[in-house]
Amino acid sequence: MIETEKMLADYQSISEITGRMLQAARDGAWERLSALEAECRGIVDGLRSAPSDEPSGSSVSRRKAEILRKILADDAEIRSLTEPWLAQLTSMLDGAAASRRVRRAYDTGSQNG
Image (cartoon, rainbow, N blue to C red):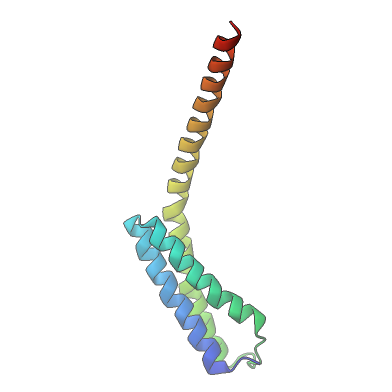
């Protein structure tokens, strides 16, 4: 079983990474954000695969809850910063795809005519 101190250290690491992810999102540094997300995912996967034996209502549970609140707050702000960018990217990609379809239709039509 995962040791309580290691578990808290992992949650703290995730919190620190989400803080850096938030700063990357604020900076528009999408590649850095993606790299940090992968780093975070690795720690989360480790936590998921290791059962915890912490007693409920303990100081460990309270500390874990504090860290999780910070992680969730960072995540919410990251999403608010990335969603407009993702919508813009989707719009650009949709426009490019439509342009390719028009060119293809024109090329096909001009070859037949």
